[in-house]
Length: 244
Length: 309
Image (cartoon, rainbow over all chains, first blue to last red; front, side, top):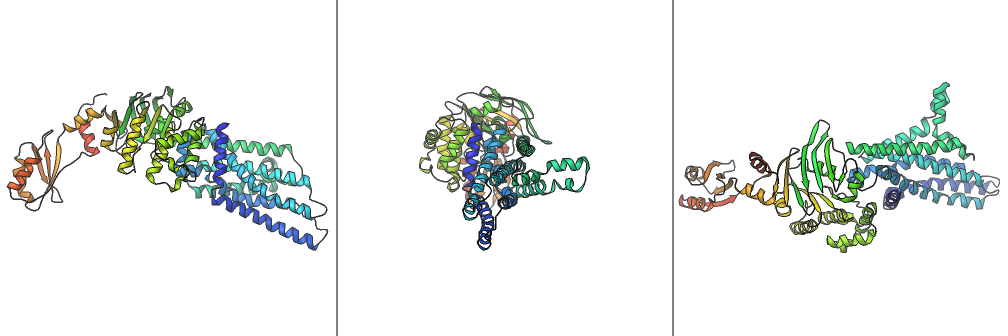
């Protein structure tokens, strides 16, 4: 556990030294900022306009799908490319701790960036009457936290697979898009067992429920077990590197 | 301290190391000498706990590298050949991080100590990306020393250093080697001779010779020598005269016009060769003793029966 924290701290701090991290924060804050400006503008023109919180979380998630791969790609790929992975794998740390440490560092950084976006709903809250739905705000951001946990875990697993950053980046975006947008499609097209499984597997289904203010136990269990699954997968991929 | 038996590693169909056996004791500096691709790095990576062997057994500091990898890693200081470092960190932050991972109690104080040992205290706050190759090498060495390991595994520790730095690093390793076990690799014969108590010569994945540096030197100097001679003109006409000299076994004209002279083991023929060239009225431009290349050393050593050291 101690090693997890040491590695997580190093990863977290390393993001603040990397231009990609700032670019990501800027992109996220800018896109949500545009939405915020629009809300402020409309509430000025139409006194009874009520801005919705879930629009902020919706756009945040759409941005994260394309931005997070740039954050997670370096976690293991970059160490492999620079050779520092050899140092990490010859330190008295088990492979699982390396993976979880990397994941935790990535999650904490993304959450830090997400936390800064809270400034918009807080400001908006002071401007509109009636104020924003606080419950929706909390479940919306909780959904974002869960999303970050699952997709960072997947990102680490893909990052453990390649030495090349571009390959990692493209593979990560591809898997994110597939998991988020496409996995539920069979469920909405056909019937039967496949459709049932596909509906259950759809990542965005539980997310949208949470944006509407409801927390489903199935959703929580699904996100947490998916995170654990991807972390185990990442550990196995990292272990397999020793045999290559 | 290090006990290796029957160690074999395959990369797919290629056998990188083949049934290697050796040992190293406390207070001993053992050198791995061999050309690139001989299997030095593979052996060291296995001993450092980076990857498993295909078969065989290796015990480091009392623990099996395959079964108790973490315990081995706690007791080994490892410097990989490429000296990988986190270039986005300062020297001190990097050493503190590595110290923390190795469970060093006062990692900052300890980092400062080792920086003093490798003479880099004034660069503690410098970002690693701004350090020269020699300084990076020393940071890598500092990292390997941080947790006061019982066994040090150093893959080409002096590669890329300038002569003054090489001297410093060699002195440092010799100092460290007094109380610990050091296994280092090199492809420079002179380095193995000056630093190591014992030398293992490895070629194509096999240990072809194992001996003390002193014995090795003796065995090499009793072998025949080779001179190259360059004269202004009439080189070809010198061949029969030179061949007739005592101690010379063969003379041939190289493509670049120099004469290559093979001599009998332990016989100094240079003064006689010089006198002959002058007597024959040729203008002497160059007379040089050739060092043995690694390939020649292997041929030389493998031709004789190996003695276990």
